[in-house]
Image (cartoon, rainbow, N blue to C red; front, side):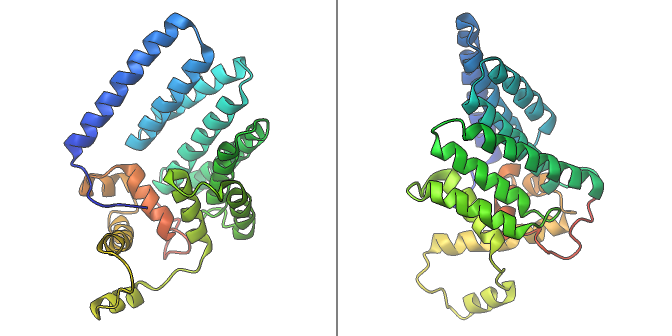
Length: 263
């Protein structure tokens, strides 16, 4: 995952507004054509935009509407994608500490059910990426601190890897790598900092070192901000999605002190 230079908030807002404008245009065209399949895809994109903003209520509304439209058309690809969006929303609620510990466990179970629905629908298609993505998110859900079923998560990882081996670029591969890291023992932060202070960086580029430092510092800020993704995002002027991605990569919630004590 490349963290790199983060665009200023104004730039992100501009990109978001442009995306919403294009979606509204697509929605108007699609209403004229009266296509349920096209509408479900539009709701899917709306859902992802609202999820990225941390607006889970709006994201859920679009996911539910898109899912119903896909059911009308008996569209397994749409059903799989929108089930996966529901899974991501539930996982985001867990990671953002919404509600108490009981609520988080409910969201984790719901996320798992949605992931397994996504797998069921994806198996009705010939879309290997779709099925691989569903297995990745099943694994990420199994590996969260409220389920901690790591052996089962490893089976999900193996299934996804078998499907995605020839497709090692993009966000889907990054998600697979995030799952892999959750399944590996964590390196001690002190050891890494000590190596850096002695100038021992191996063959890593400056960008790789910067990425690793980002992955070290954001979990610490997350702890200091009461384990609230939204607070970290506001403080650093980055999207909640990016914060969650980094926390996923380092496994910040896997066995961390006091995990589950949500505020």
